[in-house]
Amino acid sequence: QVQLVQSGGGLVQAGGSLRLSCAASGPMFSTYTMGWFRQVPGKEREFVALNSGRRSTTYYADSVKGRFTISRDNAKNTVYLQMNSLKPEDTAVYYCAADQTGGENWFFGDYNYWGQGTQVTVSS
Image 1 (spheres, rainbow, N blue to C red):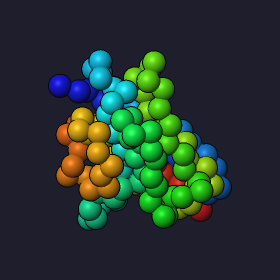
Image 2: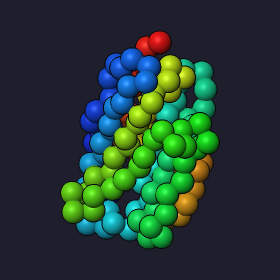
Image 3: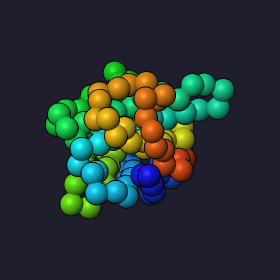
């Protein structure tokens, strides 16, 4: 069983920055694929970024490429999402997720475990 606890988020003006953190339990964290997703009411959960621990690869949705950075600290069992140049359309609830298979999956259904979600609101 993996538990994910998120922190960070909040309200920021357009052009500002925020950093989200997600602390994971479990001794095999370094092998997990960690993903970030976001969701607005009435829409499906949307892929934002992933970091594959097994393959040391990262991927980003086109909408955030060049503005967001996913990183991980295996010593702290934590994954981060640094969000810069935020736009009002980035407003959503953000979720971290863990995939124990270590795949490079963009579909939220491929992830086994989820954080509690954190609200990010970008004002114009």
